[in-house]
Image 1 (spheres, rainbow, N blue to C red):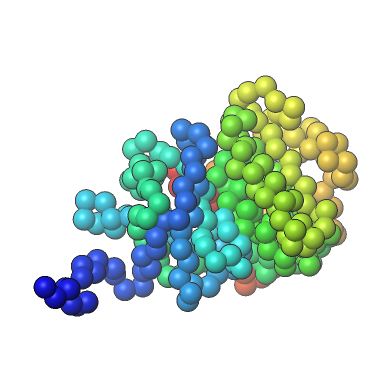
Image 2 (image 1 turned 30 degrees about the vertical axis):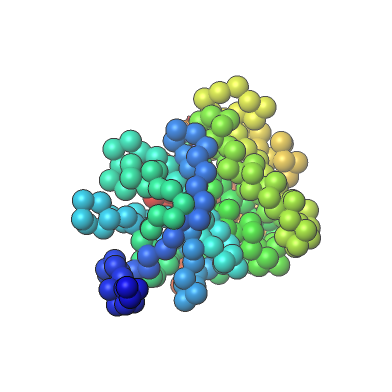
Length: 270
Ligand code: A2P
C-alpha cells in the first residue's frame, strides 16, 4: 500500500495574522496560578516587557486575552504566567493545556512596560502584584535592563506565600545561570510580601511605601525623580494607588512616544 500523500494530511486552519504554537511545558503553582512555555515562531519579534494576545478555540470560536510575555526577547521559547479563573472564558480552558497542545497567538505584540518608555536613571523599581510579575520576568532576564540601570528592584505582593513561588524560582534560575548571573552582576533585588498569611514581609506594597517600611527593608532612600524610575503591573486599583504615590514623589508617567519616569500596565486577565 502507498503511504498517504502529504497533501492528505490534516492541516488545522489557522486564521491569518495568528500563529499556532505548541506547548512545551506546564507548571501549576497553586489552584490560582500556573505558567506555560510554548514554541516561538522565528518571525515573532518583541521587546522584553510587551504583551501578546493569546487564545484557544473554544466551542469552535477563538477566544483571546492579553498576556504579558514572561520570557526575555532572546529566549527561543515563549513563557506566560497565568491566573486560573474558574469561569474565565479563556483561563478556564487554558489551565487544562498539556504539553503538545496548540495555543494561538496574534502576530503583533505591544505594550508600555518597555525600557524605551523610561528616561535614563539609576534605580529601576518594578512593582507587581499576582501575575503582574510576568512582564518583569522578561525584563529581569534581559541584559539591556542592566546596561541601563545600576540597581533593579522587583517587588512582588501576593495573597499567600505559595503564590510567590514563581518569582523565587525565577531569581534562583537567574542566579544559577552562569551567563545571566554575570550580566546581572548583583544589581537585581527581589522584595516579596504577602497580605493574607504570616510571613517575614507582610503588607500591600502601597502601604509599605507610605509607612516607609519598603525603603527601610531595602536600605534605600525614598523616591527621588532624579535617579529613580518605575514600572507598575497589577490590578487597576493597585496601579492607580501606586501611580499616585510615584506622582506625589514627583515622578511623571511616560509612554513609548514620550519617555518618562514611570510606566504602568494592567495585569490583564481577570
Ligand atoms: P489584599 O490581600 O490586601 O487584597 P489579587 O490576588 O486579588 O490580584 O491580589 C494580589 C495582591 O495585590 C494581594 O496581596 C492584594 O492585597 C494586593 N492588592 C490588591 N489591591 C491592591 C491595591 N489597591 N494596592 C496595592 N495592593 C493591592
